[in-house]
Image 1: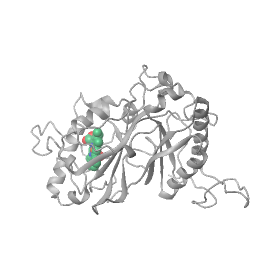
Image 2: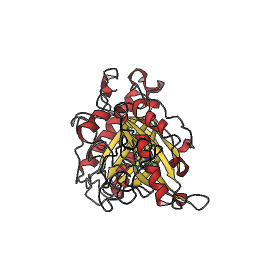
Image 3: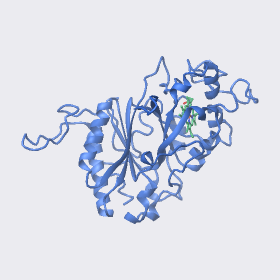
Image 4: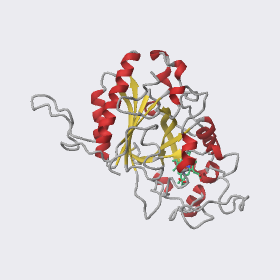
Amino acid sequence: AASYPFHGEHQSGILTPGPSGKQAATCVAAFDVTAENKTALAELFQTITTRARFLAAGGTPPNLGVSQPPSDSDVLGPVVPSDGLTVAMSAGSTLFDDRFGLADRKPLKLKPLVAFPNDSPDPAWLHGDLVLQFSANHQDTVHHAIRDVLKHTRDGMQLRWKIEGYNSPPRPSGSGRNLLGFKDGTANPTGTLASSLIWVDDPKEPVWAIGGSYLVVRLIRMLVEFWDRVSINEQEGMFGRRRDTGAPLDGTNEFDTPDYKADPDGNVIPLDSHIRLANPRTAQTANQRLIRRSYNYDLGVDLNGNLQAGHIFIAYQQDLERQFETVQKRLVNEPLVDYVQPFGGGYFFTLPGVRSQSDWYGRTLL
Ligand code: HEM
């Protein structure tokens, strides 16, 4: 799409433009807030809103003449295209510490991400007071957007970590593939089911948080050289899906539904396969499902000459414990853990949408 609406009950870029139809390029940026009090924080949030509103719509930046620094980087030329840009803004639990007097407004389930078994946490890639995810049809649009926001918010927040991601088009059809070569996003809930699983509506939550969503970001390196030495049979057993079509091992098409009841011993889809552990498809586990909008990343080469590439796991849900943590705990000893290495990310709360021209991110929070 050329552009997505900026105003709405929920932020764009979570369900829009659709769980497996995400934009091709993304950037996830975490910030430490340096604003010193609540008034300065409100100014920061208003500035981010103004910039995000402009960038999502596109337009011609003001011409300040040649004797001053330009109002825009011109990375995208003199007219900024919308290019399908969405900006999703989320808060980490540290935003609700003593600095801004927001402790009693913290979303109920928000807390810092703690390391799971098999994680190798790297403090340089973890947490943040705020996270902005910029997604668009092209990487230069994403770069332009974060550069614009940074330029206008220098006195209120500082970049903590940032990672860029990309997504493959369907090859040959259906969901895009991740860097392990498997189609990713296939079994995501859609439509009203998706809405019922992600938007916070618990009356025990602070009123301002209704319509937001809990965000999990996990930066997961993939040991791709090691993976490429594994037989296709073994790879498919680890996921429970075919590598070529993306079909579950008991089906023929990508979107076929696996039938675990017909295969109680896991002879066709192994009991410890990723999809079977992640979603056992029972009545009791139905409310544990989440929405994934993951991207590939590439950070170059490590000290040993291996590719430093992997998966920006991005998941939205109503409840971190009921959904992400429950699923993650079931996955803890899956065979795939030998081929991946989680090292960063965090838990965040994606704010409800900016409703109108006079509204701004976090207005009802502050
Ligand atoms: C499904 C890849 C990490 C939760 C899948 C599928 C693939 C995949 C290929 C099957 C296609 C699909 O339905 O999208 C990966 C990779 C990971 C990773 C490469 C790490 C590098 C995680 C984590 C979680 C998770 C950390 C949550 C804790 C799920 C869920 C499904 C799924 C809920 C859908 C299962 C279903 O409903 O059938 N993943 N995943 N994944 N994954 Fe992951």
